[in-house]
Length: 426
Ligand code: PLP
Image (cartoon, rainbow, N blue to C red; front, top):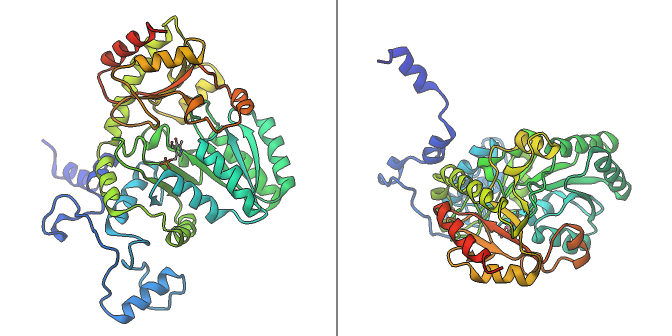
């Protein structure tokens, strides 16, 4: 039986992340005993007095007077709502960030963060490839604001990374180092500590280090915590594993409060904040994200092992099969605790083979997106990456036979049966 001392030391222990994801930041007794948080379907909030409204706006506008509250209260739903506040408190837990900001989509998060940090004349140094929407925003939209780009291959060694950084500095002050790891759909591994090192080298040379940003959508906060590897801000498409049910669109950024303050200002102006109902759905999803992601990754390991020996499958890009003595393998083990459940492979040798295979699938659904309870599959060259220049696509290792599979939560044996009968048609 536990002694009184054991009990009290247990009571004082900081609660585990999984417990905090279920309980933190919400007290049912303040909400008529409702065990789950109510959804605040309102566009605006009552001030208790004219002076209180004025003080909240002063705090929000960063013109607070002595005696004003430290934080503004609720004012208007484009700034925040109780559902968004609660979600943001819990989103920061797994990544170990000081705070989080939630958005209406992953792209709203990415665009708002980049615009909040980069100014005209700045340079963004990014690892390539990135998610297609991010690549388009960097290369088609931001250059119109006189923001310049420099790209470095995802798995570049230190010498190459430094050389690209020198070229980037020659174009102007490098304000952001932007990365995404593992890459989608090749699962290349970017060295996050090297991104930090290069950012610090740039900082020494130009006075002021760039902000290192990592899109962590593919492994999620359960499989990888980039803040621990020197990253300043982590970005998510919550639409994927964190939401986890293919029933919502959302995004987030997590990191230090001082950086988030700047992003919050622009989010409030642009209006890309997540709505209360979607925030509520995500608060529910966070309670099971660890269980779901681990189960999906376990299933993916079984499916990848099956595919790895199939005669019609080649170029299987699954991090769990990396040689643990290789540089990539070691890096993956250092940075990540899960192998993910989204990976690509060639089904046959041509587009016709891949299409025959995809059209023959009965259980696995042919659709874009990933990270849901159901397994999804797509043909990147004709869908998600169809607007990438063909020569660049080829250089990045896309083939006509390539498909990308996101393993969901079905029994892996059923997925393997489905793959088996569809591969027989190739
Ligand atoms: N980042 C990655 C890695 C993605 O895969 C996606 C979408 O597929 C996004 C960002 C954009 O997210 P959303 O579709 O939620 O805007």
